[in-house]
Length: 346
Image (cartoon, rainbow, N blue to C red):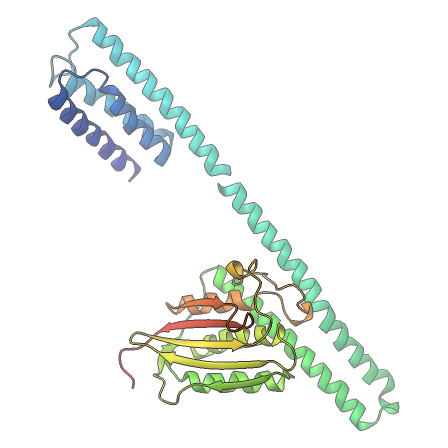
């Protein structure tokens, strides 16, 4: 395909040169137009297509613009010298431009590899830090049960077991997020669409957040007549769980968190709004990036991947996600997940 486009560039040079000669004849140095075609091939496709364009330009320039035209004969010695110099300059230019392109490509690749390595190191550091605390807590509680079970009364044992269960659930959630972000980055997220009721999903997410110990006032106000959407119920629930969990993480224990929704002609918007301190202006443009964290967050609560995963899930459904902050009176955050509305409700 690179040679096809290089040929098209040479044909374009022929047409432009012919039009200029017809309008301003006689016009010297039309060969410069062919050099543009050579440079295009070199910068866009590399050295070999550029050399092909150089030879094609040499032949085309000779055939169409050097007397006698429409032949490859050269009547004047100075014309032969000009053509020879053109070919040398074209090939040299194409070689230099192509080499520069190759060097640049090796450098877009080196930077990409460095970014991958940076993300990998950040991920490993995040995992080691975020997993260490709950694992230590589980180990401590389990050790207490093993070593002091006879000395602990039933409520104390139940409390330790509940603590182990809570920390294990938190670890399970973090592992799930890590697996999800891996699938998203690999474009391997499998979306199994079916008719789903966002109201039911919101109720499950709110109930689960309360069971996990959220002290904020959590409520959902999704209209009963909200249209069903075709989406993956498990993935949408995970996305909403991450967004609600993020609101719980960054608001005070007595904050208000509302999950509601609205329907448009072609979209359904699922919203999570809190009255917390809001997202800083510095963080807001990159709040959906991996490992983005608000200052002051409790690192024990997650890996900084929640909103990035929510974004990947929503976009895999053909939707979009956005953050608004502040919401009212200089405070609050609203995350809006917009999904395509289905044409018909079953």
